Length: 339
Image (tube, rainbow, N blue to C red):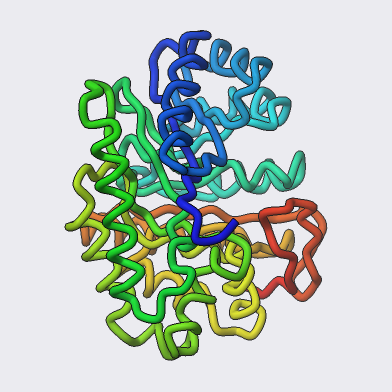
C-alpha cells in the first residue's frame, strides 16, 4: 500500500448538491485511478441552507458531507441532523467573534450527546475556503478540490528534499490531469498524516535522523511549509502542516510522553501548522481553560493573518488521567492529559 500515490479526498463544492454530484465525483476518481492513484474518500461540501439535499446524498453512497461554516445559532439548529447523520461535519468561524463559554458549551453538548461526533466539528479562525479536508471545508464557489495523503510518498526517502521533490511531481501530474477543467479549484498541499509507518509524519522525522523533540526547534517544518505553498502549481485551501494528535499514531505516543503539549502544538502551528487537531480532551476539563486557548488562537490568527483551527476529541467518558476509548479506527487511544 505504501509509496502509493494516495488521494485522501476528492471534494466537490456546490450550492446544488443533487445527484449530478455523484457522476462528477466518479469521473474525477476514474481519471485519478487511471493514473495509478488510490482514492480514499469522495466528499461534498455545501452550505447550511442546503442541509436537506446534502444529507440525501449520504443515502446514495457519499461518505462525507460538510455544511461548511455555521454561526453558533445555526450550529444549535443543525445539531439534531449532525447527530443523526454520521457523514456530516461543520465548523464555526471565530476570528471576529467575542469568544465566551457559550462557544465551549456547544463542544460540551456534542461530547455529552454523541462524543464520536467531536471528530466532525472544529472551531476555525480566518479559515481558508475550498479546503477538501473536513471538518475545515468551507464553501466559497462551485468546483472541486483534491487533497493528498502525502506522507506515504516518503517511503524510501532518506532526506527531506527527496520526499518534497516526490510531492512536487505528484502535484504537477494532478494539475496536468485537470488543467483543462474549468471548475478545478486546485490542490490543497497540506501535509495530512495518518496512523503509523510511512503514513506518519513523526515516523518520517525519525527516519531522517531526528527525534520529534529535536525536530521542533529546527527549521524542518518551516522548510516544508514554504515548499508546499510555493511549489504547488495550483494551491487551494489550507496548504499547511497538519499535526493531528490522535490521528498520527506516532504523534499520539509523543503526546503521551509529554512531548506534544498544547503550547508546543500552538508553537508549531504558528510557524507551520494549522492549529489544534484531534487533540484529546477530558470530560472534566475546565471550560474556562478551553475559552483561554480559543482566545489565544484567535489573537494569533488575527495577528499573523493565518488560518488556525481547534478540533478537540473526546470519547464522552474519559477524564484527565484516564485512557480514552474513542472506538474510531482513525484515532489512537491514549491517557488524557490536562490542557
